[in-house]
Amino acid sequence: MEPLTIHRYGSPHAEPMVLVHGVTDAGTTWPDLVDHWGDRWDVHAPDLRGHGLSPRFTEDEIVQAHSVLLADVVALVDGLARPVALVGHSLGGVLALRTALARPDKIWALVLEDPAKPTGGPPDPAFVAMNDSFLETMSDVAHHPAQVERMLAETTWSRTEVEAWAACKPAVDREYIRRGLSLGDARWEELFNSLTVPTLLLVPPTSDMAPRQEALHNDLVRTVVVPDSGHCVRRDQPSSYVRAVDAFLAEAHRTRRVS
Image (tube, rainbow, N blue to C red):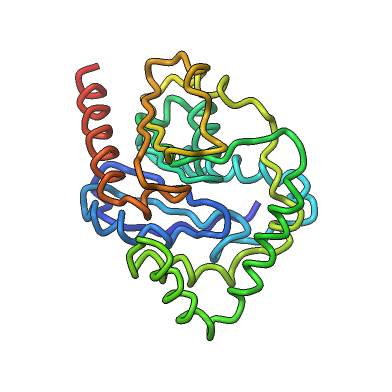
């Protein structure tokens, strides 16, 4: 398979961190986090296949897109010399979760922001149609200034986040959206209970995708419910997000050094 485009931020001398974005986003859509962390991390932020500057899906790949995406993230982690802090949102969250299960020796901390819940079947046609229609409205970059102003009026997101969000939309592989959104195996709480790395799960107060807390029996998994947030927790409540993530990573790093 053709390799992904990887955006690099921070310091190459720092500990490696991998940021895995959600559907229709890109490796460029973490600007506020990258700015907050500065040179504390060696950040690797891929454009997932079918997004940004990364390759499109071939006909053979698109029918098993969820497996191809996972293989891409596993290959990225495998290619780094040191274990990583792995951070994922939505689609990137479920990919990060499965990567941590596949390569626990390569992940020392896992951060999941409202990860996408697999259903085991084809994606909801209404969800596919909504995303395809949305991307059509974003395909003409001449309209992006108006879209940016709309999002600024409707959300609490920063201008840098909204502009990065808007800029990557024309680069999304529409065939992936139409035919490749299945997330595979429907197991969910079992995956969290199988994790062997320290994990922080950040979710909004209401989430259709969050694992049922009563079904989680893994002391390594810590859940933080972020008030007044939606699916994009880090954009809706950035201060709460970075406070929780920074504290978690510091604790996981101390524990790692002691062990």
